[in-house]
Image (cartoon, rainbow, N blue to C red):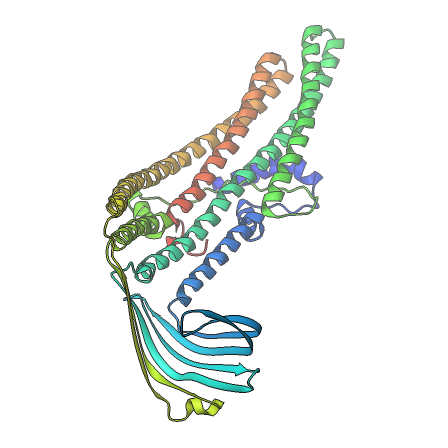
Length: 484
């Protein structure tokens, strides 16, 4: 009930400003945050990055799917070419010919072994226009396998790393949306403070004008000194200047907020102070557990460790014997006509083994392995420190959140007391019980208390969204934040 009453008081205090802008519909903090998450340029950038990473992941998945490929070659030649003779000399021969080949191949990568199996059909045609004949040759069908030996298998490592990278990007997307919420909250309170400052300045101007007019009447009666009247006139002019400055600040902060959330109209935004503080407790152990379960950093640690292991495996595999085996078995034929290729074809087999053995490399390969081992140690130490920083950040944020809740409650009470004290001081001044100095002190304390209360609300709500960002967990609903 106290919160509801306070909301009413805040709105009543803002009434002069709200009334002057009655055509505008006020926005709550949650509406601004939701608008920023859905419509802001930052949100569109985040969504685009997410889409980009999705298609990168789809590209990775396609490497493990069957690929149907058509390859072709067409070469026409009408000219003179050198031809080697039986005695080793060259003769220059006039040729007019065409050579064409088309190949249809179905290929499949095998991630666990790094090999590739394929099924291919190939047809070749040769035309000799000078002698007016043509010939066909081809492989109606043959199956083969290409198997690297003692070579680094990038496909096997990608199967372990790329899904983590994709999951990391999905969680990064949610974190970025929560960061947008933090930024929108900060801009929301910039405008809210400007809005409150204008209300304060307008109210102070009205009060100073009233007090000055009363003092003028007392001065004419000889009850107020000229010095005190001049002091009141100076305060009135200062209040007029503060109203002008507050209006300018309100306009600039409003433009910044509208630009961030994606609003293009020229209307002044009106904001509702989020004075209702949610009543829920945050347990440090729960926050740490949820952060480890939900944050991209937790997956990023695993990915970095695997990448370090991959780099070491690559260095070791590339440091010795490198070999590859290609084996094929199928059918082949040739003839004067296209159909001859497919009529009673004969068998065809082929085996190709290639290898490379470094004999003397002056320690190059050993240096590569040692470098990879040192990098792996460095990454292990770095991750260990990052995990400590990760947990400390969560712990600190939870403690800060609890402290800011208490601070907000204190600032709320202080604001209420300062407002009531000012009203008492103003009334006592009007009946001549206190000096203008005492009234000025009460005015300053009133204004400072109001700004301090809004600042406390600002810090609390920024901490609220920051805690969501760090844990990807909604403590109010007690559920993980999956889609922001």
